[in-house]
Image 1: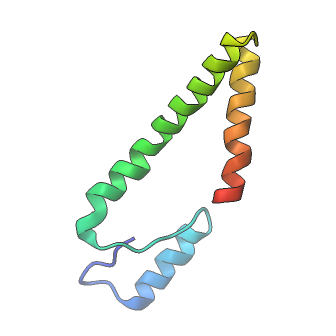
Image 2: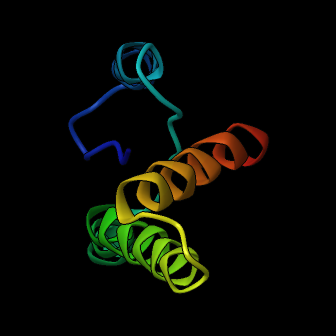
Length: 84
């Protein structure tokens, strides 16, 4: 989040509490928001590619695709709890 010129510290606390109820909140300068949007908006597509690559490797090793995708996606989900 970035507080605009018209926002007060109290406004920031309210917004941080609202967004904090569903995820983590970071503050960044407004000039960085193109990069923030690129990372946060495109990041899920890259994670999907990682899951797909893991599944492709598992299929090449003999697993059925549905099982491979399930295992790969749960692997990413499992490890995300440790890092986030």
